[in-house]
Length: 87
Image 1: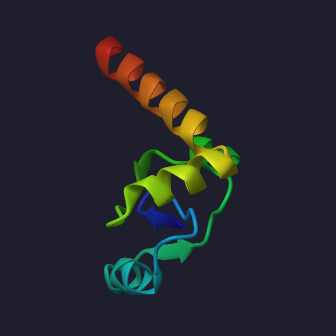
Image 2: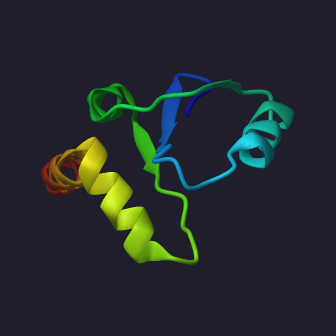
């Protein structure tokens, strides 16, 4: 799910274990536009990333790995940390 907040884009990772309807509603109530995003390639388009939690994280991790999100998330975190150090 991508959310446009001003010039910011927040990616909310949809890896098949969350009901994102409530989250999408909250985002829209805040005046943002929410768009469902389901691929790792879409993470690079965001300035921020939210990984919603689940109670059974082993299942969640398996879904993240199957969709390729695990490596994409690592790369995005590494890039964000590098930008932060450069600032």
